[in-house]
Image 1 (cartoon, rainbow, N blue to C red):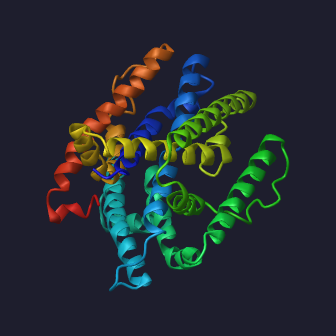
Image 2 (image 1 turned 135 degrees about the vertical axis):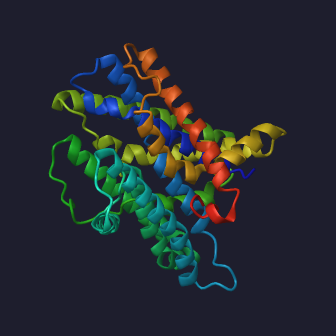
Length: 349
């Protein structure tokens, strides 16, 4: 087990949980307030899932150097190829699944339209992550030299990222006009650079660091939940601004959770919990493949393995938990089997 495996495993479960609980958020008018509130709490806490992957990528990649016989451009090409091939195959698979569901005819024009759609946008909502990570990989040859001699450029970039994010959130909450709207968008690159800074300055968190991070996470989660409920009920619809990955509350929650999981992961790694380490390592190695597959499984489950609408907060929590576990139970063995052969391992790197 690698001490980072817990972060991969946790982020993967959070992704499934987020997608299992998000549907109620858009049904605010027809969902009882207590059940909608449960979904709001869960979604608010799980919005950190994808940012955790971005932070982890920066933690691993930006502070390391290319292999001795590999130029930065070759490294970038290798990393992009490792993502773009699965993106292409899984996009085609999901495109066929969607077409089959609506009774679309499979012919040459269907193939052309499928390839066109893949080149223009993500076929399903979760595949956007692969497009984003490809763009970030393209920037590695630019970002790595900037931080080679000093951390100052990375610190400046993250401060700018947080400042603009906070300014945008204040503009939203106070109904101001965001002066940089449509002009500056640092996207998820901030998480990537922040991952580098975490590795440089807090790669081995102390108990007090983990405790402070846990408190920060809980405080931000409460604020996110309350403000989302206030804005959504005032508008009569789900207002997801404070749930987007660029919101400052999500940024602080994500970084805090990363530090907590880093601390716990190191404690497990240094412990004698052989079985726990074996399971976490196995799940972590399959996490990317599970990410790619889980939406198809959730679709077949209709995002609710129980099949009945929750009538109380406790039943809502139970439905989500069972759906997450059921989806994982289907995905894990499939991805594990695909990874056994070199012929299929590249599909689920």
